[in-house]
Image 1 (cartoon, rainbow, N blue to C red):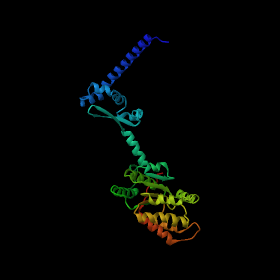
Image 2: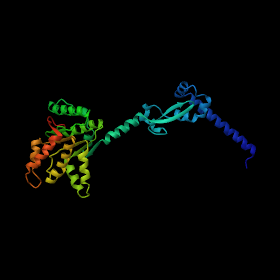
Image 3: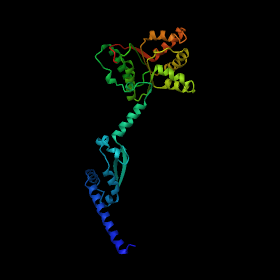
Image 4: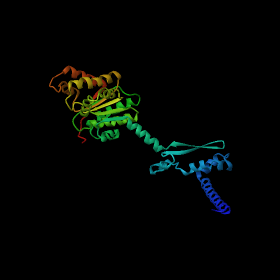
Length: 309
């Protein structure tokens, strides 16, 4: 068993070691420029107040407070990753809080923005389309670009009640226009949904089996900005044309919600296409109703020019 004298000597040595560490830590803290500025701004923080709250000063001094090195792991290594310490003084009391660093704020804004764009079977490059990339020397595309900017000017103030119906040959960038518009609307906090028409038809048909069809159709009805890509690319059953597409367009027309389209058909051509059912019947009147609804929720814009593919 260790003697009392030996234990006392070891205790004194450990205490001295602790004092050395404490004094070194205090010296490091007090030499920090931010701490020196804090004490200069708050002269009421005397030695007693500093010693009483040295652990708070140490926590503040030891963490990253400069957002410029966040991408290299600065704020991510803090006690609260992605947050930087903020110090406040109330009399002789020091309060330490944490606030989001600018990169955390930016990341959250990007996540919110991404959540505003829903997609059903659309390519990734379309989801990342940029309005800045649609400019070009081809004058055949200029009317469509002008129409896009005019629509976006309206969206700066309020959601417009009409979208755009882009029609023209393959490869001129109609689908890309839809993606670019969706991203611009997201910047304005307006949610949108992009759907590829052939897969949309298959999605609805498969939903009949699990009774989720009404819920899915409601999403298409109520999304602030709906975008239907490649409408007319396949034959529709009379049921889908009238009960699904017609129902969606009727709701959006009544609620003043814009719908955007891309198609290889002009509206006249689309009407002929929709009038022919999968069974071979010709239903001109019902097809005409769909076209009238499309006209109520969008303005037709012809897109020509060289292929972008």
